[in-house]
Length: 173
Ligand code: HEM
Image 1 (tube, protein in one colour):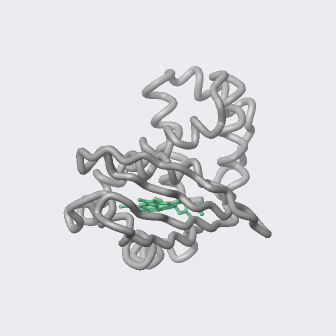
Image 2 (cartoon, rainbow, N blue to C red):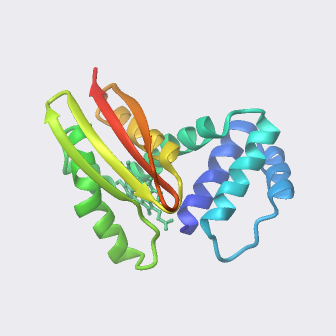
């Protein structure tokens, strides 16, 4: 995973729980520095879950929502180019992540296939060896917050050979 992911996780914990808590989490997870395989993110979230006594899926989701706010500041164009949550989500795979890949050729990105049924309903199919579907849930809520919309997310976990394969059912409220 890229440095921006880890920097943002440490920023979120330091802002919300203080630097001492982040030190405790690092102490418990012992990530190596420099290179960040996804296992290190999973290790940090596991340590956060122990220390903060919070469910891991909830933590991935909070972090996704927080990171969406970081993306709004760092890549505002992706947000102003779309006018709604669904429009941005339809653009993630083919456009936004494609641009991200140009910036960071070694980025580890999921497959995200969106299908709109109507203006209020869409499905988003997530497939990734990184198993970060709850992180995706948080990103979706963070994007909805930007457009001042409320989107409910239901999930269906499909069979995956490696990582996760999830169907998201999104409803604009
Ligand atoms: C402006 C918007 C966005 C930008 C700039 C962006 C950029 C990125 C970046 C830089 C990474 C990290 C890649 C790595 O560390 O190797 C990432 C990962 C990811 N992105 Fe996006 N992203 C955006 C929107 C979204 C949205 C709306 C979703 C919602 C479903 C999403 C889903 C994910 C997921 C789930 C990952 C984790 C990797 C994985 O599961 O395989 N992204 N994205």
